[in-house]
Length: 76
Image (cartoon, rainbow, N blue to C red):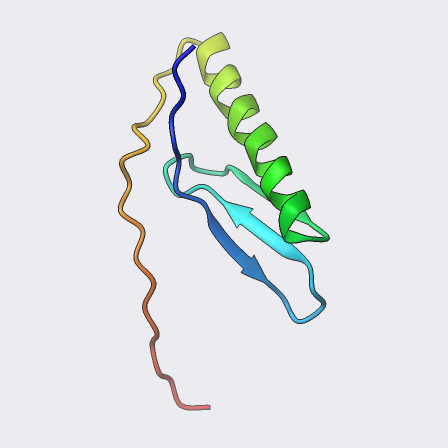
């Protein structure tokens, strides 16, 4: 089986919880208590997302999504 690398955006909130989102796979998002946990969970989420698409005969988007971080200043 071939492996494919997907870009994952990790964020941590002020309570220490982590979120992982896969921009190439709409709706593929998960949460965890630690970075290690959320990385394991997002791997499972990606596999499930892909399996669901395969089962229903839908196409699987390319993992070639460019992810860039930027800061935007707003008045507070």
